[in-house]
Image (cartoon, rainbow, N blue to C red; front, top):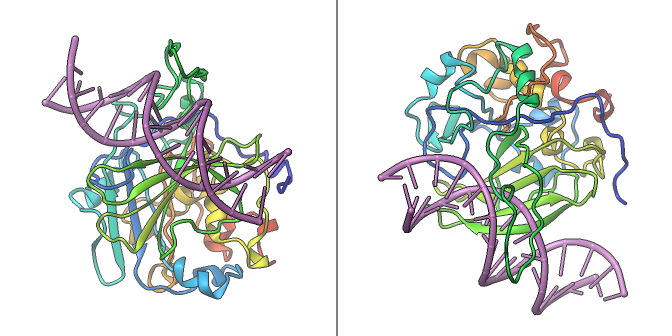
Length: 310
DNA sequence: CGCATTTGACCTGCGC
DNA sequence: GCGCAGGTCAAATGCG
């Protein structure tokens, strides 16, 4: 109802399995994710032409990126040993989360370095279906329908400094569960996009290390448009990352090496703010090479033209 | 009345 | 094989 169908059919993920990250610290998000966020809050969004509500601007003033170390060894080394939400330097704090790689063997990822390979994962049978998806239930009382095998889609996490748990991202979500998280006083809530055709899910939880940080993890890609666009001031850039621009993120950071090195100066130093995290890599990454960001910079990669100011 | 949230039960994968 | 933790389902409940 609220959504318009046919958002961006062009890019879609199918079955990406896993997040493989080694070196993460223990924290809320599982599956291996590394978060990096700039502690200086500026308006990267406005820089990109996003009109963010004043009150949200601060909330989203952190930028983070997460990647799979597996795909980027150089980063892995850089991340290893990091604890969740620990300040790494003047500007950047980092959080790493250890995770369970769905592919113990190792390489489910592919990403930056080998785009072509990544696609393979889509065809592979979903390795691990967390949740419900396996054998037929013989539940006496509650009748549970068993979904086929759940396909793990790419996930992206955002770390946002905010007092409110549920940040407006332009989409409508229905909460379908909540669970206490081990080693964390804060519960994790599970949400699903209200659009019946959309399979995007997201989990929201607070960092046990820093309660002021909300970790939002998106899984999947919206098959429709958000309720509002950034320039309208209603949506947060989160929406943009929420499954729509994922592949671009890693690409953007791609050059490999240290995170800092990858972030354009304009962003790295004082403008990066939000926390975007690419977790699952997207096999859909079309470009084998990373061209230096154009003047559009990050926005050009992650924000579709239609979502920009212009 | 319809939809969203709450909440306990259930399922699955993983580690020991 | 067992227990734990994460993730999901669905009935119950609340709210507009």
